Length: 272
Image (cartoon, rainbow, N blue to C red; front, side):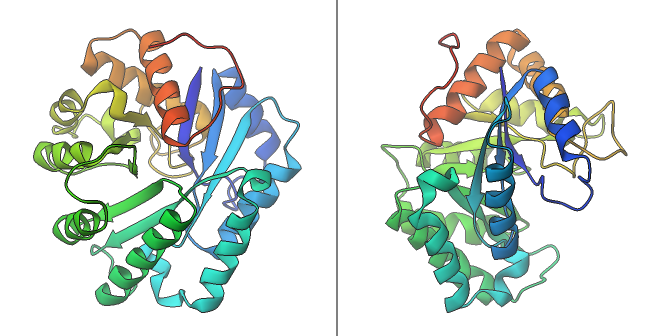
């Protein structure tokens, strides 16, 4: 069983969503988490889950405002997120995110990004939910904010660093703080020379697999629209690097996701 822990299935490119969900199930995917980038996508993700509640796939979502959209975050945005979170069980909301910092594009002022990031960490803490972190070219500020908020050590799972592309040392700091590390399609790219070292350094109980659909499509489908069915290629690459069978790695990552997002098992699966 596979768990794609990061997909944007409300994207306009998914005009065949029924077929996408069916292909995912046929590929062994049993759960998908719809990550969101703004209030509108949060609302659309909740609606999509409601519409497909009878599908064989277990669908969950997060709610949050991406650093690109931080400039639009205001009291109304916070109220809308809190209204959704007040009904988190019915809405199948299991995390706050994706939130964080992005200094590559700087689509929102950096100070605003930091303020909004901190505000959403507070929201997650209020609802006792893990966070999905986006970080690009902002490692120091991200670590400073997380350490200030959570402390350098952890006694519980804090969240996941989505599509991790940092160093081995940064991964170790984050794991020590209680974060899982999410790996996506780029780990399958031939020019991604750092992926094997990073994956090898992360304990298996802190690894999640993601697609970030419709982005970051893995080999052998690179260049096409990504979808949850393709998470198997990420899994296979991670399993290869960790020296485990795909079945074993699937069990481990599925259990990791259930643990992090506080989801009760709905299907039988082997213990890692």
